[in-house]
Image (cartoon, rainbow, N blue to C red; front, side, top):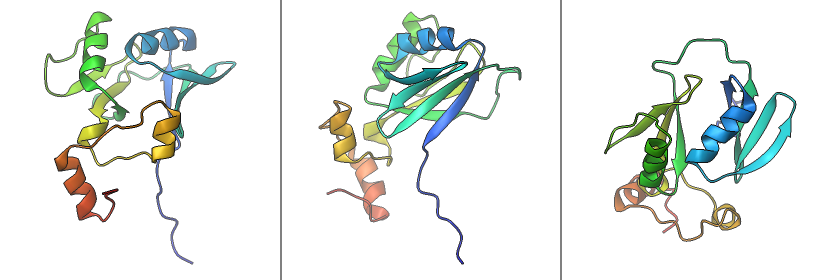
Length: 147
């Protein structure tokens, strides 16, 4: 028997102090649909993936551990973060900590090798998102390029 192969991420779970406050905070930064809300948890839909918000964070802010969220427009996310009073660099990378200390990095879809199936993009209202030449070169090098 061989080892199981990693295929992708289904979801990321974030511990927050209060789920309703977290939904309000993230709703000022990102356009999203709520997949569900049960008790002390809420689920933010990202097409074929999701983020689970769970009430009850007790640990201190993360210094090095982080995760990256892929967006269609990194600069729109930067502006929304700035308008929400979150400290982010004026250019370059968009890294921030949410009010509960979760370290989040924003990356733009066109600039990375991460891809979504066209049907998933279409269902999310994101048909036509394109990749930069650099991202396409990365995909081609791995035999993953759609073109």
